Image 1: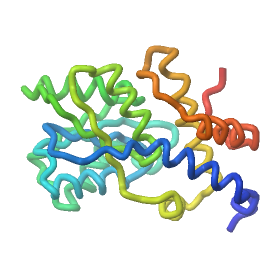
Image 2: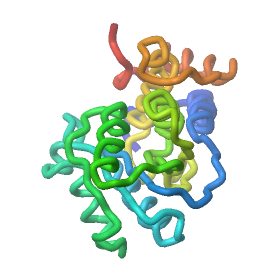
Image 3: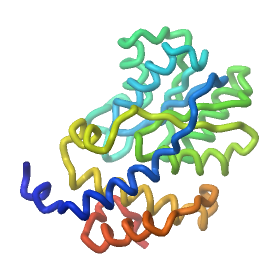
Image 4: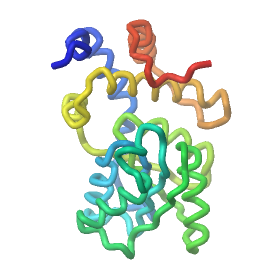
Length: 222
């Protein structure tokens, strides 16, 4: 355990778990017209997408995402391209996958994918967003704002916070990301990027406390 990890207290951990649970939407998974795997640093999105495809939940899978400063080294050909390659390795047929290789943020993930599907003659009524676990709520709010005519449900790898931390290997970074995504859930509706989401008081208090404690490397600076 690193020095940074040792500084995470029990109270901070409990606050992080509150925020983690809030980010997860808890949607019942039902068959949909299309799934969208949202690009990121987390290859678990491709794993979850492949698992859900094999479960028969959708016939078409779109991976969306170009590069960002945090993913360029890991995915030099772009997030969506690498996700597709991993899904192929996991048994998803190439004929079921579309790739949107240019999106640089979640809003572009949604709008560029919508345009790609339309160009391929696909106008879905139901969409499954597959993301990092702590990105479910923000991706849902973004899609409901930018693509209101479709029904949206969310999914991610079925991991508890403990297991996700083990997969990432950096507790401080994960708490920073939980805080950063919650900031975006709170602030993006004011900017027109997403629909507003109710934030329970205990979750907001946990967010403010972790912000005060310095878990801020992923927050938006004004």
